[in-house]
Structure formats: C-alpha cells, structure tokens
Amino acid sequence: MVDGNITMKLRAGIAAFAVLGLGGALASAHAEDAAPAVAAPQPQAVDASLPRFQPAVQPAQLVPVAPVAEEMSEAEPEESWEPVGRGVASWYGPKFAGRRTASGETFDPTEYTAAHRTLPFGSTVRVTSDSGRSVVVRINDRGPFSPGRVIDVSQAAARDLGLIGPGHGNVSLAILDE
Image 1: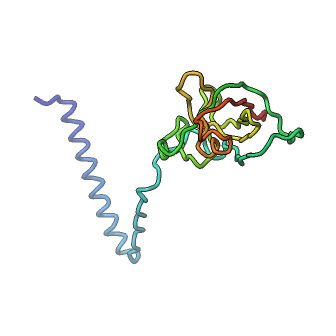
Image 2 (image 1 turned 60 degrees about the vertical axis):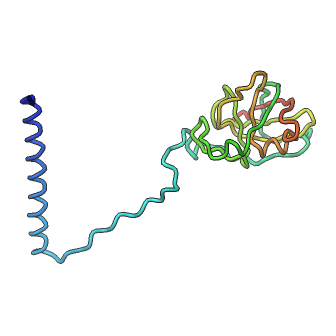
Image 3 (image 1 turned 90 degrees about the vertical axis):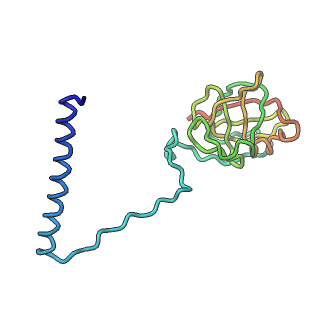
C-alpha cells in the first residue's frame, strides 16, 4: 500500500513536469512564428584527463618557490628565516608520483615540495643539510610517518641536498617569516 502523501507528491511532480513540457512546446511554436530559429549552442566536450577536484590551497595562496642549491652565504637576503628545528630528513619520489597529497595537490617528485607533520600547507621552508647544501621547499603534504624523521622532501629537493644515495640525512629547518 502506498502512503497518500507520497501519492499526492508523485502526482504533483508528474503534473508539473507535464505543464513544463507543454509550456515549452507552446513557447517554441510561438517563437517559430515570431522569429527565425537560431541553433542552440552545443555543449563543449569535457576533457576526461582534467582533474575534478579543487585543491585545499588555492593558487593565489601559494608562494612561488625557486630551488636554492648552493652553499649558504653569510649575507642572507632581505627575507627573515625563523629556525624551526633539526632532525633527520628522508625523501619520497616516483612511487608516489600522481597521488594526491594531504593538501589536495597531485604529488610531483620534480617539484620542490615536502611533507611535515604540523607546519601549515603553503609554508616556505629552507632545508639545510649538515654538508651546508640548502633548498627551499613548500609544505603540501603530511608526514613523515617514520619514527625519528622531521621532514620528507621531494626527490628533486633530496637530489640537491645529497640525500638520494643514503636515503636520509641530518638537516635543520627554517621557516620564512612573512
């Protein structure tokens, strides 16, 4: 047995659909008398290869970062870097390429990005190895999940820091004061 309210709602929906359909047919019949027919624009095909998500960090919020693979000089630029810690850094690369990061971006091992447990997404961090080599990365993921590690850097950053061979190394971190 069907509930009376559901039946009434169903009938009302069908009636509304019929009225809209009839009204559209009448309107198009009158439009043909008044003006010549104009072809309606055809919908554009959607490229299936385009991502269908919005990143958590919008492009306007991202800070453009250029890699800095050089010895640290005595004269710092006008930017002010605040030390945020020391510890062991590791890296991740091709195995994770194309996967979504915690910020919603797609991971690209050729970009200078990193994973940190607590720093805000979009933070600019200078990572300096004990050998004095330094890179600037942008935080776009969460981790590392290995005990004793403070940051996971992308393959590009690891290459410039000299971490590819050993897989990890001691680093110091400094965040850009904005």
